[in-house]
Structure formats: C-alpha cells, structure tokens
Image 1 (tube, helix red, strand yellow):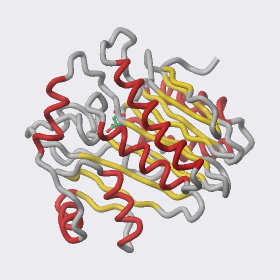
Image 2 (tube, rainbow, N blue to C red):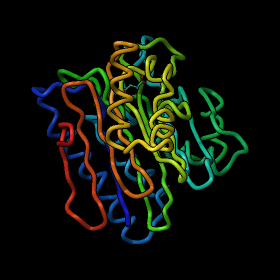
Image 3 (spheres, protein in one colour):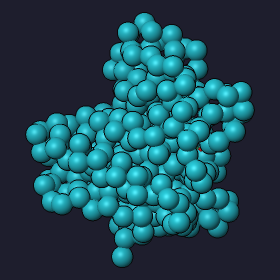
Length: 287
Ligand code: ASP
C-alpha cells in the first residue's frame, strides 16, 4: 500500500481568490508523489518531490512565494525525516535556494549533522554545488499576492510499500519576521516527525506556539499509545487552541495508511491519494 498526503498551510480564508491555485498546487504535488510511489520510489523521495512542487508554487509560502523578513530578505526553513532510520536533515534561515527541502535532504545524506542554519547552510550549499537563485526570484511571487493568508507553509507525508514513513516541511516563515527568526518547521518533532513504529506528522500555523507543544511528535506519541490517527490529530489541534489560543493545523499518517487532518483555521488546502486511486483535494476537515 502507498499513501501520499500534502497540505498548503493553515490560515487560509475561504474567500481568498488564490485558494484554487493552492488546491492546484496540492493536487500537482500529490500526483507527482503518487506516480513516484507507484513506480517504486521510497517515501523519502515522494515527500521531497511533493514538497519541491509546492515550493515551486508562487501561491504558497515556501521556496518561490516566501515572505520577506523585516530586512527585506527571504530566510527559509525546511526539514525532512526518514521514519525507517529516524534520520533528519534540516536547514533554517537559509537564503537564495529555490528548493530548501532538497538542501535539507543533502544535510541528512552528506553531513554528520542534522540542522544547518543561515550562513553555514549557504556555505554548505555552495560547497556541494547546490543550485542558488536570486532573492528576487523567491520574493516576486509573494509581492504579487493579494489577501495573503498568514500561514501557508507546506508539508508532505508518505508511506511506501516497504512500510516506510517519511515527513517533510518547508516554509518562508511568517510575514515581517525579525531576521534570524526560526519557526517550528525545521525543528524535529515540531514542524514534522516520522517514525515507522508510530506515525508521521507535519504541522503549520503559529510556529511560536507549535514548537511549545512539539506538536508533530505529540501526535505520533498519541498514536503510539493507541489513539486513532484522526482523533489524535484533532486532539493536538484542540490542545493548541485551548492551551495556547494559537492558530494551526496538521496532517498525520500511520503505518497502516490511516490519515489525520485537523486545523482550527477557516481552511487548510490539502490533497491525498492512496495507491492509484483518484486524488482527493479539499480544504475542509474530513467528514
Ligand atoms: N509554521 C510556520 C512558521 O511559523 C508558518 C506557517 O505555517 O505558515 O514559520
């Protein structure tokens, strides 16, 4: 069995005229990953390539379309995690790359480290010949956006036929953040988590709050303790609402392919596909 699920961020309003573009991006990302999984690719490849599609979509706040900080720079965060080994690669406050998720994967595979930040991440990118871009390529799309939602970070989870789970998240952070501000997205357990023996999850929303709850790991732990995936996802978002009065959402996936989708915002675009079935695209909680 294979499953892919992606999201385009919590915090969207239903009347946002860009919502159809976000749906299209989620559907394209799910389709890319579905094809890869059906061709025998790993869950890690599936989530990386799904997130690359989302990073390419100017409507979403990751890669192209990232928000600028107060200095006018684009600083991006990303994380990828392999549920079979618990290996993690992450970058934070990295500039001038179109695909932070692929740089995060190279941190995982090409260094003994987990998380590289700012100039160190840039230097690493140059050392391995990772493609660089101009800041203007990342920014142009965000400037063109109207009625931009406050949280449109992206994430993906996948299960491959070997039973391996993987998780990925990527973001430009929040609008008008201070230079050097890092949110939940590149922090293991907060922005994303994956463990074949429990579950995978990835979060979006108010990063300062999400990291206080280490929310992705929280969901995986609840599933490990016997909660079903959807109720575990809903309980984590209820905790975010009740304890921290914060906005957010998450997706989860367990090793049997059960998915969870929960958010306390008006809408969260997402798409998922099981095996070769038609892709489901929506922005409403599952019924
Ligand atoms: N969680 C992200 C951050 O705080 C924002 C988002 O989800 O859009 O950086």
